Image (cartoon, rainbow, N blue to C red):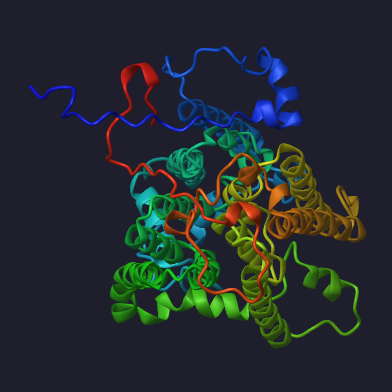
Length: 501
């Protein structure tokens, strides 16, 4: 048995940041459960670790989102043109069970579909997710019964994704697990979780962010490539990572990440490309050819203009705006007085991608919620943004109720819907603005104010700058200390320090 002198002392985990001590909204909200944790409270001795609490709250909110869909599950999806909109419980999932051939046993991408949509218009990994859910759906009973089961099976699989997201967000900033409650309690997250299959890509992206925070560049790349195989948006995270690694001189890690992403994406896509290219390419041709759609500023322009913009003009201009946004983020990265945090730039880049797109569907908020929690874990700003998103969630369904209810005109007219669009665009822009302010004034960043540098940055955390465009350096950046890191699979904490997921 080794002696005490030869056994290295176990490193104690860094002190957890408690939002109720630094955030007035969190402190006020905690009064519902007894108030902020006392200074002398004994922590780390209970099964109820922060990560477990966050996951259970997230599952509870997800379940409430399922309850909100009950009127549609009981009949509004199947009877009446507008009732699924007046109850604000619409979902693509049951409608596409038959509409995309799953009820008939057709194989996505390989079998041609009857009707206007000749192939499944989703990326390959999402198509696999949909197909697996169809295998688990009982084929007995009528088509309504099968569609109900298909939605229910998908909801169960998406709940697992929601739990993964909650774990990853809570663990990415090691000293701030309680920030995960922002995600767990986000009303827009619960309301939109089962509209479509976006949570698969969001879960893979959240897991990728966690791996990067632990310094695992290849694992980050592989997960990001899989996320891009499920939805296109995760690809844009490589842009912010490029400029951050450029400023810090971490080229090896960036190329490892980019190589892992490319490899994982190719492994998923190449087999389908080789044997069913027409079906595989449907997602990309559909994305290019689809018209101006719900939630975008392009729709306001189109519906208020006697000469609406053409699809080619919108595609070209939206692409140019994304490129300009990236160049702006690059300029911000190289000129900021302190290197921005990875989560901040990731949020800004994804937000720019959504804001300039020709469609801003209500479920796209799912892309932003985990990144917003990591970029700006401030309850006031987060709740302002969420209020705007909930207002838009109601606005789009009431607008569709208005347009599908005939002469009854039950719902929100076009002018009111335009105001709802403007509100949720402004809400996202507001959150972008405070993130940019935090970058330009690092002392306003609540993460750095608590003593961290870039806890989601992995190898970037505490790294010295190698390339900047001007000599503005934050005082705290001088002689940065090497941060402590704990990887998955490392030593477990002592029993009296508590255990986490």
